[in-house]
View (tube, rainbow, N blue to C red):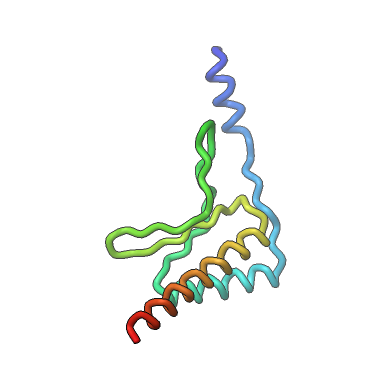
Length: 103
């Protein structure tokens, strides 16, 4: 076997680390997701791709008709909650600014 195939086999054997959530954290996460869904976002918690020279962070994006928020499931629960809280504040601040401009 060559070196590359050994590296690939080791990578396949690694198990991803998923942090443990408390009931309070899980309830807060679900509450924030429902708030964002009411604001028109689709929230997805996934293991975002990582690799050599490739680092993806949690964030938002938009297609022609939908707005998404991706949360890296490998982050600690408190980091995921902080990220969603910041997104909610950003979206609400943007909505408030649009209302002020219209007035």
